[in-house]
Amino acid sequence: MADAKAAKAAAKAPVELQLLVLSGGMSGAELAATLEGLKEKSKSASTHKRRELYWNAYGQMITATTKIEGQAFCFLTYKATADGDDSSVELIELTKRQRGLVGGQVEFLGHKIKPVGPDGKPDPTAKTWALAFSEEDAAAAWDDINTAEPCICISADGVYVATKYKRVQCKGLSGLPKSGKDLEALVSELAPDKPLRSVSFLGNEPPSVNAYNVVVAGPSKLDKELPPTIGCVGSPSNNEVYACFVQRKNSFLVGEADKLLTQMVVDGDKGLQPIIETGQKYCIVAYKNALMRKVYVHETMKKFIERAKPTDRWSCMSSEAKSTRRASSPNLGSSSSSSSTDAISRHLAEDLSCGQRRVSARRGGRVKVGTRSSARHGADNR
Image (cartoon, rainbow, N blue to C red; front, side, top):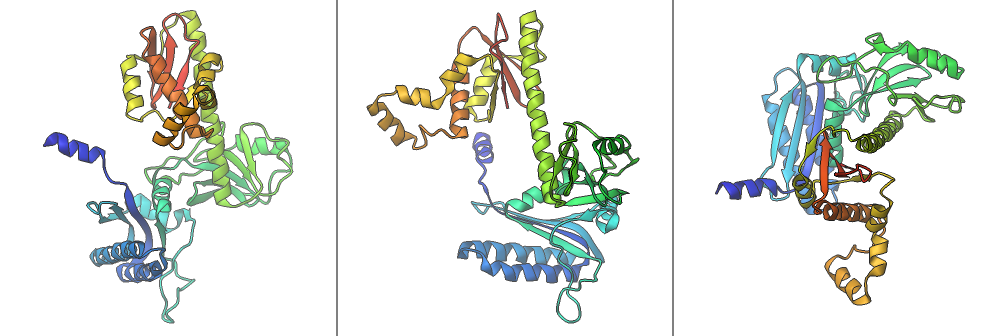
């Protein structure tokens, strides 16, 4: 019985609908009226089933607002799975710190829904508001508001600490620096709390300048003078600024992974002990359980890379074999990145089955593979 419950939990149905509403000080009645408006708009959903899902979700959210007394500083979340067994509304009250951030210490970005005035229309002068997100945007907004790493944005009117949906001005400027040296001098003065401020929901966590988190926003002639530690985007749009930051962060992390692979080769040549060592069976289990998402292979593994190319294996197959494989796997033979990753993972698992291989891993789900005699066949798997 316990095994059956564990199997059911492991095979949990995918999320059918997810909603998120953040209330910035509305009363319970105002929030209920806002949700009623969102409920009416959901009639434009593409199918009858989706309309029913939205209708039911907003109905449950409206019922939850009856518990609110006074101003509502809270999250309202709704999640329904495809099997219908896990649909629920949760009202999460904000902490004292979070209330301060939502109440005006930090600017929240997005379409703010204002409470309805006496004329029956949204009151643009109201200081209270609500933000509403649905589908994939709900999960993304929840992660951004609660846990996203902020970037440091330098624009014409000031220095900001920002994520995609929230930001705070830390220093006023009358324009962008006129030269690369002026910009570097400005960046050198930026430090936590002096003047960089925190936008974190979890605590006072002002950022520090690092190799990827500073972005210059807006039209500028500085792009050719910028050092590698400072990025730039031609638009002051917060979405584009944060997208630039995310791209720079990912590039930095890939570069760090490459350094680790290179270091592994050097350490292997010197006969040094890997950071963390584990058995090869765990890597095979990870592969079989689809926990291996991406594989990073060191450039010295030329034969391995050639073997892992789907096109090479495909071209060597007979016509009869190709027909059989197509019938069982319609996507086989594709040159997409996912096929390449699958092929590399498959060959990695095949190589791991050899008795002369060992696996060394480090934190974060990365796996490195090397022979007993040398680590020149290194792979970083994430």
